[in-house]
Image (cartoon, rainbow, N blue to C red; front, side, top):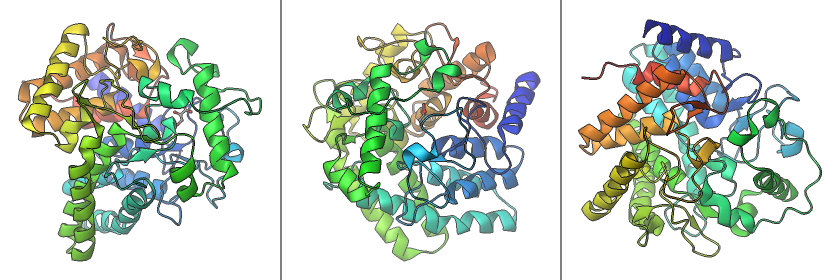
Length: 422
Ligand code: DGY
């Protein structure tokens, strides 16, 4: 264990660019939104000062309208495509024009609970108005139809880039006008573990669309070619709003607390928009045609993290859980192995992601599913013992998938998976 602890520590230190951390060298040479938030949990195990700095530097890139971008481009690195000039998002600190799953408030609450130094507490408290503005942006611009859920405008925004949940909505995105480009991800990772060219063309078409409307959030949310209610971001935002509410109460901010409570209640009463009664699971839904993806993914199980669902819905979700457990060696695959779209090594079409395991596990423990919690913890621990710190893991063989020496996998080891299991 000591060896893995040291290796994890070394990965964070090597990927640390001074105040912010890259997900991995080469393939992802900038600061990514949800990566940074999870990485802060890793730093917090040995350096709270550095943990807080990770969130502070992320929020330096916050837009005036409240959005926190998914990539912050502090340097221009030709090894990554699409870089700052392709996004052309018009920010002083260059960034992408979309966001990512809002785990930051949940992470800041975790740091707040651990912090005991007055200076650390003051710095965390100073982040509150920024977190509040970020969540207000979600409410204002990503719940355009007031459904109580998060509507995403790009698969990259969900963090689950090539999840089969996007196959159908993406197929409607026109890409014949996309200017020729060179993918750089394939210089760093095996093509069999990455999205396909057809997917990439559409990712770029969506970037070109955003740029063509000057990243106007209202236009993108109401007229964009890709508008899908995302189960992952919705569950994460709900959980993060609960964290934000706890912080507002802690700081005696009654006005913010009341507004956050309204957001929470809207999501609680609206989340069944994402319940597919045919598949009996929470999944993504295209707001343009109302169609469900009909897929069980690791994001479906984030309903535990958000603590939503009736007893019957929970039982249905747990039935999927047990079925999937019987079909894979390790939990939790990013796509149902019973689906024809399942691919054990291709990014978000099957591989296991330690950060999602962490959130799902926490949710399971909180709803009283102690055995299933232990199962996810044990699986995550075994995967890291087997393959160390890759980007993701093959759920059948346990082999690493995607990039290597990954910051968030190292952070999850330090913050969670290294613990002794009774
Ligand atoms: C990529 O470039 O693969 C990233 O996932 C985008 O966020």
